[in-house]
Length: 146
Image (cartoon, rainbow, N blue to C red; front, top):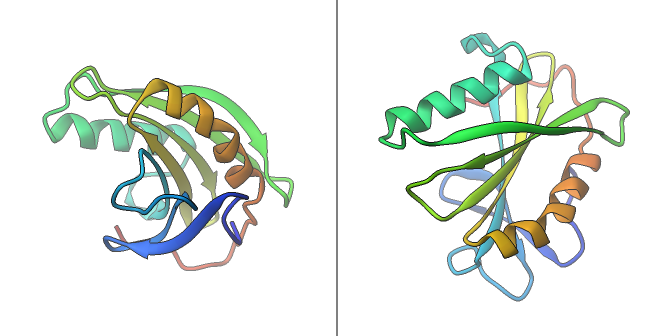
């Protein structure tokens, strides 16, 4: 991802390398936000499904036993690689989240979009697809630690 999609701003916040939010909002007050992260593949994450399981287990351990994720589709990035999309739900919280995982040589990079309501979530999904499609694979980069 080189920059924010139309109508969104890019910045830094809460230790995240990239955060995105609608231009008329702020990171702290927006009802819909997005963020990008990277997770090393050396921690047992070697495929997109491994990343999905890792993050679901993490939320289960954080007292969200009903947190669930499901495969949605596979998109093509601007460099022609696959970006795999998952949606997440939790019965305990109203927020909805979608993440797109990009399997790099040394890391799994992902961008996630989170919304407080179903309506905002659905409205933000085209932006999520745009983030995924604009991703440019960097196969030799060094992964960041989480």
